[in-house]
Image (cartoon, rainbow, N blue to C red):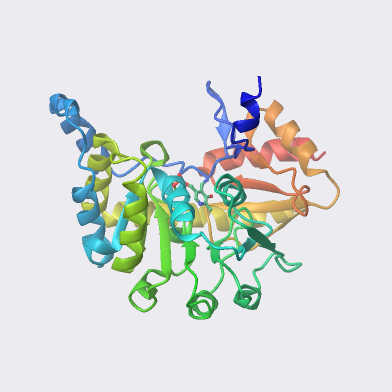
Length: 354
Ligand code: PMP
C-alpha cells in the first residue's frame, strides 16, 4: 500500500492552452502566425512518396539535419546537437551539465520550465531577482554556482540582454556551464553563437518553433564546443537513441538547407513591424509595455486587473497568456499575430476596457 511513497512526485510545467475550433484568435503560445517556408511542403510531399522508409529507425545522429545546421550557421558538425524541440534539448542539458552541490542560477522571472527541470532532476537552484525594470543584472551571476541558464531575450519579459553582458557572464564562470536559451533571438537580438569558439563552457540553444514557424515539428538545437556537445550526446544516447522522428529530421534538414533566407527574413520582418505598431496601440489603450526583442509583448494596465482582461478576452475567443506568479500577476504576455488578428485584439480590448 506504500507504493506511492516511492513515486517521483513533480509539479509539471503547464503549457498555454491549445484551443481548437473556428474563429479563435490564438496569441498565447508565441507561435508564428505565418506558414513555414515552402521547402516544408516539398519535404512533406517527398515523405508521402517514401512512406515505406517509416519501417526503419531514424538516423540516431540525425546527420542530414546536423549537417544542414552546421552549414547554415557556419560551425562544425560536432558543434551541433539536435532534439525534439528546444525543451528536449534543454532538459537533456540540465541532466548533463548541472550535477553540482552548488546552485544553478537563473532569473526569478523567466521560462518557468527551468524550475520544473531543476526540481525533476533534483538540481539545487537559486532564483536571481530581476531588477525593478525586469532587466537582468549580469553581475549577479558571478557568485559561486553550479551552472547558469539565461533566456535571451528573456521570457515572458521579452527583454534582450546585450551580448557584452552575456559574454561577461560566460567569461566570469569558467568552472560552470552557461546555457543561453535563444528561443526568440531571431526577432531582435544578437546571438551568442559566435562565442562558442571562444568559450568551451557555453551552450547556445535555439529552436525552429518560433521564427521558423515549426512548433508542430518539434525541432530544437544546441551549439557549443565539440567537448560540451559530446557530453550532451553521451547523456542523450543513455536515454533514447532515436529522439528525432524521421519526418522531423527531413523537415528540419529541408528548412535549414533551404536557400530561402528571404522567406525567413520576410516573415520575421513582418512580425517585428506588427510588434512595433502594437507597442503604440497598446500604449494608446493605457497599457505599459516592456521593450520587446521577441515575437510577443509583456504588458500591464494601470486601472485594470490582468486576470480580468485575460478572462474577458477569452470569452471573446481571444487567447493570451496570464501567469499567476509573484511580480508578474498583473501582466499579460501577448503573442504578435497577423495585423488582422491584432486588429481583432485591439477592438476587443477597447470593449473590455470600457
Ligand atoms: N525556451 C523558451 C524561453 C521558450 O519560451 C520556449 C517555448 N515555450 C522554449 C524554450 C521551448 O520551445 P520549443 O520546445 O518549442 O523549441
